[in-house]
Length: 169
Ligand SMILES: Cc1cc2nc3c(=O)[nH]c(=O)nc-3n(C[C@H](O)[C@H](O)[C@H](O)COP(=O)(O)O)c2cc1C
Image 1 (cartoon, protein in one colour):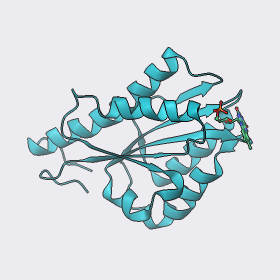
Image 2 (tube, rainbow, N blue to C red):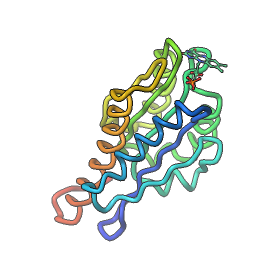
Image 3 (tube, rainbow, N blue to C red):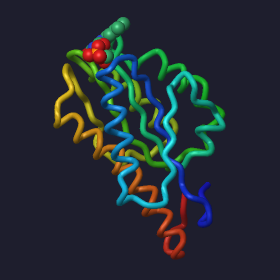
């Protein structure tokens, strides 16, 4: 739970196995660190390196993955397998966003993440970004907005807590 004294943390958990996917990650991080968004700490961790304490210590999440065989990447699945039960009650209601990159079909990967985050009772605060094929300006822009939207959600919730106008999460 975030208290009004602590700066909220946005945790970006990603599987980015190629230059194209890393480019999307950089756009997400650019948006999350937009200078106009104040008071949010942004952490970025590869899915195979993110731990239960990392998840518990964060206040909101952006997940990023490649589409692999019609599912999320094995790395992101391993992350969810690791953190799901230990974090189940603690993270309910926290905001999240998702981006998926694939060659031609990201639907199954999106569905697979949606099912797990529904189980965790996370709150989707930004439209999922699905990018197929090459990275263009539009894809970069959507990923920037994704990171910024989740970060702004955390900043606004914290501002509301500080002014006493929100019960917090
Ligand atoms: C084992 C494997 C399975 C894949 N399965 C899918 C898939 O089901 N749908 C899809 O759109 N792309 C699929 N891809 C493509 C990856 O999503 C893509 O390679 C990844 O997002 C990185 O993009 P890049 O190779 O253009 O850099 C697969 C790639 C691999 C290596």
